[in-house]
Image 1: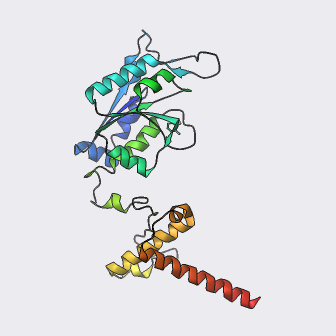
Image 2: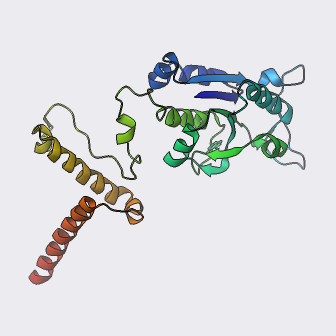
Image 3: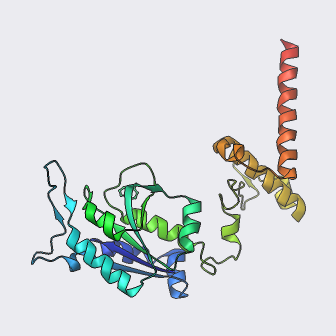
Length: 254
Ligand code: ADE
């Protein structure tokens, strides 16, 4: 998978490429991460990439010529790539969108700055608008890095442990189970016994219960829309019975 980021801050992307799984994936040739400097595509002597908005108002707008030039240069090198504009107006990125993008041959990620990009670029040269959440950043660079990281993890061979991405939160619609490492007791709090038992089936069962618990407490809406399997139904019914007993015992005492 090839990622090309179009930005006025290519150093941000260069530094991102130098660390962790992204670096390993680039070195292992599973992905490539390149940045094109929008200034190099400016058409004036001073390499200006922004200008005042027509109609007045505050803030600056990214000029169309450098953005168009950079998109065309990137698309020439990878014609099948999807051209994505990072913008708070886009559809909101999540694990399903990450999976969808991981199936593309390449991604050209256009980072806006200032108030936004000239609308003619959005209409003519962009395939997809993506936001990383309902908040405003000063530019699309952080959004581009978030997307690259989430998509790269889904490319086979980018993660050390073969199945690590499959176990991630959201990969099967539940949040991940709780994790523990040594020491066995930390500040008086022990690790759940079953995890030290070596019983793989019991550990898997505990992890499923922990996943359901995390999801119920933190993202209950994920469970409401879920096709529960029989084991998940059993666990939820067990809790439901336990909660009913507590409430009945309480009412009897009153
Ligand atoms: N640029 C500014 N804010 C953004 C956001 N939330 N997502 C993607 N790109 C952005």
